[in-house]
Length: 415
Ligand code: HEM
Image 1 (cartoon, rainbow, N blue to C red):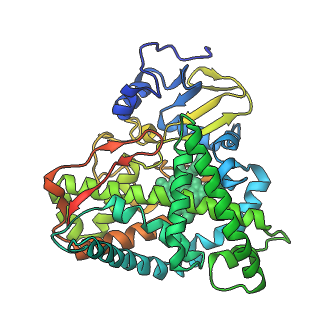
Image 2: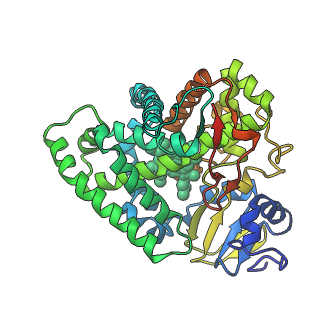
């Protein structure tokens, strides 16, 4: 048994070579060093599907590491909790993101898709361009996918449209904080300030909804009660902050990545136009092939042995979703984007079945997976209906970027 992997020739996890092509690095990790200690990062990397799945299931792999990365902007959120505290608090919000609770939110999503398209027309008119309509070139990530989930969640919270842009500002500062692996102090300060402002905004709203509950998510959170347990104001604020952040960048990036894959091979786009089940299969394959959230961190609470390597108690371990999803031990032709593949059950793409790990796995499995499905389905169908001739602007496929969160940097398309 060894305490580190043996490979010394692998590039540094946080270095430029991996940033340029993380998938090439992950391929080498899976083959040469499935449990790899990275000196510069100061933690272990797990890359194979079976090992990542086992780690998600094993309570020794705790989420204590989120204290540093998330608590300053989220407060103490679900992601940090374990055991019965986690199940009790998660139970209070789960009904609103699953089954019947979710169905009532779908019309809200449909309204927002149209609103964003209308809004883009308005913006374009203001800028003396012709609007979001066939033939126009727009950045589908920056002008559509980035806005959609923030507007949806703000609408779900029952907040006025006039406050959408304030939410977008707070959200952007918080996302920058979460992506700030180098801990730039200026970015950190803006993230903390955004949270302080968001919470100052939310506190009187939460108190008002306690007095006069309505048909919105804040009212649902303040009135939720299970076995005499309910959420106090700080917990409601934390949930809202987490929902705003956890659901927005991920969903927006998934939408942009799915459209990119479809446009890269025109016949895939044409097929998605005429077969909307195929469209959702392509979304499912996008989640496997290019998951927006490429990794989840954990901290081990005891020594644990994987693939003959001992990971000592207290170590930080990165579960590499993006690598596990391309493990050739689990998926045939794993490095090929193929919505027709038979080894990924698309009907389970948004379920906690562990086929791919884009939504995590086990007790912290994404709470918003079904909501994301609804948003992606409605938004993509609307885009295809309205813009069947969509293609990359100037025929050029966009550039992929990002290590922790990854998607195309922008998505210029001619509609
Ligand atoms: C395609 C879109 C999405 C992706 C890829 C995604 C991905 C993930 C992943 C990987 C985790 C697990 C984190 C971990 O174990 O450390 C997670 C957890 C979570 N997600 Fe999502 N997410 C998406 C959309 C959403 C949406 C729309 C919401 C809600 C508005 C949401 C809310 C949450 C919450 C609350 C958790 C924490 C659950 C817990 O700790 O029990 N997510 N998500």
